[in-house]
Length: 396
Image (cartoon, rainbow, N blue to C red):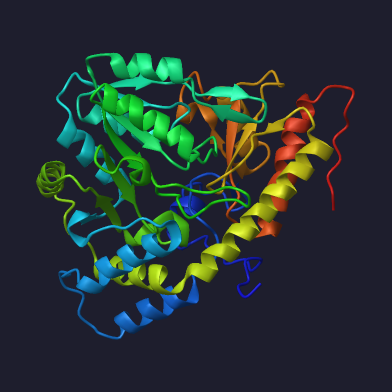
């Protein structure tokens, strides 16, 4: 590999939310979705060059910013975006809230597919709307959509928005074109607008293919994306809303300004351009490395914790583990792992009290040695509940 993803970059003591939220220095964090990999060198160099100018005032977003977005999505995803469709903002979560506010009235329902990214629930409720769940159906080591339930929920006259997540966090699905088309057709039939969160769209595992929702219906959808998760620059706070519909875009733009998330910082603007213009090879290698981590996780679980099922990960770097074999709730397992095992993972119930119960989410975007250490600790704790027929032994 051209890039060294095995290199451990010390992050503790850098005010890292991932590493410094828990004060105990012996805890290994495999929870919140940011990477422990060094940012791609072209991004580092672009930021270093900008730092040489000693003034960091308000930022005018240049044409080159829009060109970087347009060229990247055309080149990588065959999606032809026009400059006027793009609204920049400070993050995808603020963009979710702004789009919901623009498209709904208090008391209306927003449909999502659970288990679902935890911030979706608060974004919906903070706009005075009701969460409506289309619970995904477990089928072997993956999930499928219950389309009958999906249509029933869309047919509810109070349902005005469907909040799609593709690739799906936390269950790891990358929806295929036929699934997207069927969801798009149902939403259009029942006059339900689609907000598509595609923040993990570049983190796609071998054998899988990402299709932007706009390629199946760009007229009844709004896309939210960002280089933040894909290139490990979440702290630079930059994201885009892409919307072809002029009236919808005006409404979203107004809410972005009302909520005052219309200003972005100079480093986010610079980093996005470097990422999209120069870092395609970095994202490709990073995906291969994360795939290797996923394969390591599967082998570890098969050898040491065979009662656990690892859900197929088609996209994102977030593994979804089924621990229903144990007499432990997700919250209990998470607490025991933190306090006894000194490894910090996410409880499945963050992503739905019902749909997430019995699951844990693990962040695999870290050097393999960090993952190995975390898994040894996870095995020591959960191995206590494996039963007499399996004695846990930690690999060296």
